[in-house]
Image (cartoon, rainbow, N blue to C red):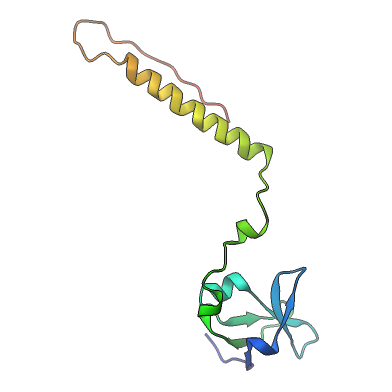
Length: 120
C-alpha cells in the first residue's frame, strides 16, 4: 500500500456506536474509519471516505480475535425470502429422497421419465 498519512494508536481513536467503527479526524474535515471486523482480519489501514488519505492503525490483533462476524452483530433478522428459500430447500431434499426410493435399476421395466419443476 502507498504511504500513510500517519500512524495512530487505536487508543487515540474514538468508537462510534452508531456506525460501529473507530474514527480519527482527517485533515480534510471528515474522519478516518476502521471497523472491528477489519481489525479482527488483521487489516490496519483506516480510510477517509472523503479523500484519498489513509492512516495505519497501531493495535494488538489479539484484542480483536474473538470478534463475531458482522451478521451476528445485526441480530437474527431473517427476511421472508430467506425463510421461503429454507423451506424450498428442505422440500427439495424430501423429493430427492422419495425419488431414490422409487428408483428401479432392473432392466425389466420400461424407463420412466420424471419432470421436476423448481419454483423460485
